[in-house]
Image 1 (cartoon, helix red, strand yellow):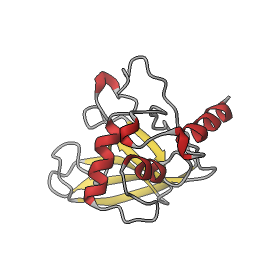
Image 2: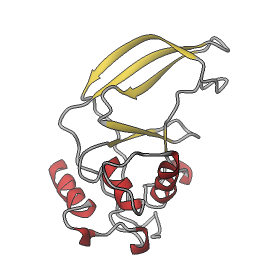
Image 3: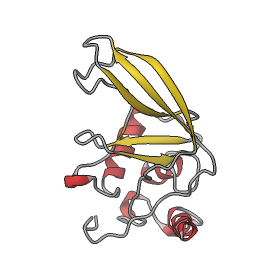
Amino acid sequence: MRDPMTAEFIEAERPRSYHILRQSLLCRDCGNRFECLVSADNLLVKFIDQETGVIRWLPTYERGGYLDLISQLVPGFGRNDEITMQVFKRFEESFRQIQEPATGGNTYTVENMILCPKCSSSSTVIMDEEVLDTPEVCWMRYQPRVDPNMGLESSKGPGLVDAAVRSRSQLR
């Protein structure tokens, strides 16, 4: 694994259009009201730094996105295979090694469940929600190449490295 302080980080190709829901929630256990952002159309996967609450988004279907990363980081996983808990855990373990670190060296994890920030209860109710159409977000970034033993290589044809270079050039 490369030193994250000197590594170059890339982003997956971005979807042209996506929707995020801004939800106002009420915790049934402690009465706390809070807001949460969730993908409205499954085109994005939400990652969060559990220590600070900082959010990053990763496209699901684009080149270099969530499904591409799983198929390249989890040996034997095909893009159309079911994402079991075992596959998910193997992905998170491998992705943690190549993702851009969060503030203070923390790592981002996929947000699977909405928890009350006050009492950590999952017993919440949606009070209101607003659809945000292709809002500006912070994108998940990761290293383009890692240890070949992890299976993430540019020699597999047009993959992560090629897609990420194109994506970065589109940002300019």
